[in-house]
Image 1: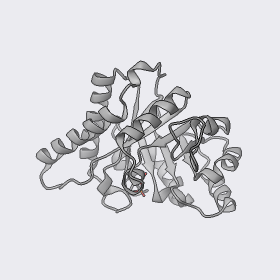
Image 2 (image 1 turned 45 degrees about the vertical axis):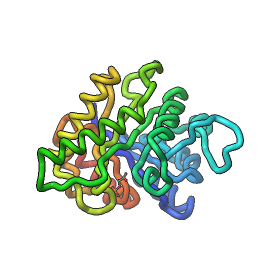
Image 3 (image 1 turned 120 degrees about the horizontal axis):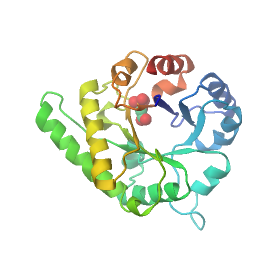
Image 4 (image 1 turned 90 degrees about the vertical axis):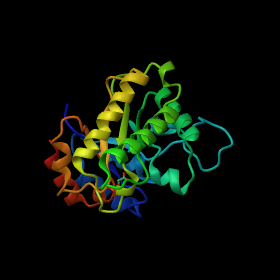
Length: 246
Ligand code: PGA
């Protein structure tokens, strides 16, 4: 299976015009483009090869929930993937695992794919064994809480994706050692398999990915792709990342 590259545009760009221009330049096979909500529909009309994603969705389908967007709404405009539990939402908007869990269930029930972000807050690279063990425990807890109840759903193959994003590596230029990222990703796959009976999932790496370091991650067959933030709003840089990934 080829690698999946997710372009998480976050709060960029500022106008629909720029969003459309950017989408045209990164419309590649094997890419998911996740624009801010106001641009999703128009970007979706542009994409011929890439698939459409959203950066979040709410856990209710309808009701008195000012400012929220439901999975049903996103599905109706062609969204295929929804990113959930991103560390920026956990940190800035105080999203809890219980909230993320409800969101995950709602998107899966709607038949769309979830990209669930997990990752430890800090890790001292100097203390490899002890530190990786602490990080694994942290992530195990996130997965248990965020995926509670999914065994009851009939989810299809590859409907659940996980992005391993060590929080200390996001937007900092301090990307994880590829071997450590691989070890964490193998641990995530093991948890998905043993605790949730999910064999067919994809686990991506995210955190300061760029065209210079992408090969170091993608050369490992068990790293199924990357979630790219900052570098995904630079069309030329993102094109190089895609080219070097497969
Ligand atoms: P970054 O962001 O590539 O800018 O580190 C990754 C992410 O937050 O998804």
